[in-house]
Each structure stands twice: as C-alpha cells, then as structure tokens.
Length: 328
Ligand code: KIV
Image: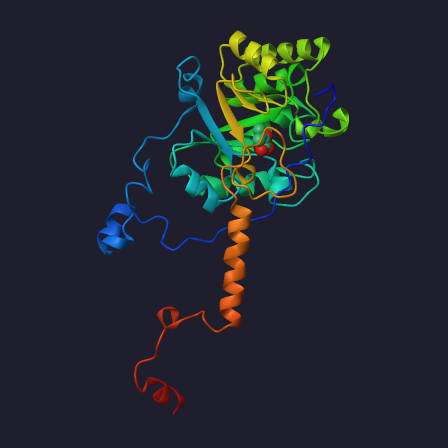
C-alpha cells in the first residue's frame, strides 16, 4: 500500500432490523421461564453471561497490560444490543456509523445528536452488562467547549450511555478535558477519523509518513493527558499502533490498526457479513448473514405463494359453532 491508499469505501450495509420482542422485557427472565415447558426455557448456552455484573469504565482501563484483550462492537438498536449483551462482549459502541449502516447516508456527517440519543436509548434498553458508549456526532463538540460538555451530557442523561466517544486528537484535547471534568468518561478516536473524510479526501490510511505518524503519536499522548480512558486507533499502520499502545497508560482499541492494540472494535454489520457492497481489508466476516437473510426471505415468499405458510400449526381456530353465534 502507498501513502494515501484508500482504506476502503464507506461502511455501507443493508439496513436490517430484527423484531424478536416476544416477552415483556421487564419481567425477570427466571421467574417467567419457570412456567414454560423446558423446551422454551433459555439454555445456559444462549444466555452465558446473564448474571455477570456490568462492565465499568475502570474495568476497561484496568485491562491495559492484563493479558485479556478488550472486545467491542457497534450496535444501533434494541434487538442487536440484546443479542450482543448475551455474549461476553465488553463494549457496545453506538457509533455514528449508524448514519451509513442504518440510515443509509453516504458518510457519517449527516448524523444528528437527536439520532444518536434515540439509538443510544434503544441500545441501552437491550443492554444490562456491556459498557454502552455513545458516539458524539459531527458538529456536536467541534464548535465550543461549552457545546461539547452540554452535548456529551445529553448522551449520558437522555441516551443512557456510560461514556462518550469523540474524534480528533490534540485539537480536541480541551473538549475531552472539560467533558472529563464534568464527570463523563471519554473514549478518544484518532487516525482515520471518518468525520474528517473531506479533509482526508476519502477513507485513507493515516500516519504512513514520518510527519503524520508523529502527529498521531502526539494526538494519543494529548488525549491521555486530557483524561481519556481509552483510545480508538482507526486506519493506521500496525507498527504505529503498536508503538502508541506500548507508550500509553490507557488502553488502545484498534480498527484497521493491526493486532497489537489492547483491544479491537468492528462494525457489527461488517462482522456478520450483512454488508455486501464493499468489504474493507481490515474486516473479517465471521458470518454470511446477508445470504442467510435472503434465502430465508426467498423461502418465505415461495411458501406464501405455494400456500404452505401459514400451516395449521400457525393458525388460530375458532371454537366449534362460535362463528355461527357471532354472525347471528
Ligand atoms: O462509528 C463507528 O462505528 C466507529 C467505530 C467503528 C470505531 O467510530
């Protein structure tokens, strides 16, 4: 790869939303399932982390040099958040990639703070254990320190996030410091910061020459000094990410930044193979859910047309004679 190589196109994925809310959410699971036949009860395998205590910001900071990598994924809605929370994932980021993944925008710049608050609320409703981090969208923190603190506060107070993430290094250190002083934990984000896509001229790997890499190292240390509890390193060479990771006291979480960060983050839709438009080099698809989804839908269409669905087992029946009474 050369300097300025495109890291890949926008992370556009098919908007996809499950609707699996079958049970009243606030009923304690254990007592509810007591009344169901064993085949309906949740198995240990399905809910392995149900009773684990919530992940905290100090838990994440404490993972530096612990030998256990931090794992993070994005989610934008209740259903996906609930599924993720039932795994062992440490952090659920309500990323502003929401704009591309769920809202179908070309980049993340159109995402508003109200969008982020709505989706953070939905994710929070589905999450009992993982740390929920809310992303600060474009123009919600750049204009002034005061706006940055106020808007970070809204993501916590209205959205229910436990921490916020914002993009930018040295230039944003004063915002980070002020938000942290207000008692709100901040995750930094440097390297290929998608909100600066126009400044970069595309989604290009950053820090490939001496001056850029020096700036990114400076960004990392300024954000640490400003009080960030962790740093996302996006789209930078693995060697630079390793050097930054070794030099910091706070953990780094990489995306397109090689293996040596203290943790990794991916966009969930990319990991699941829901995005068929473009697969960037740094993404590994652990499933092909777009294919699964399309074949399930095609089967449904065929069965409806062939009058195979709904079958008798999916049909409610009236009591004998009751229709007659109703019609009389
Ligand atoms: O918005 C996002 O999804 C992100 C990451 C994947 C780091 O910022």
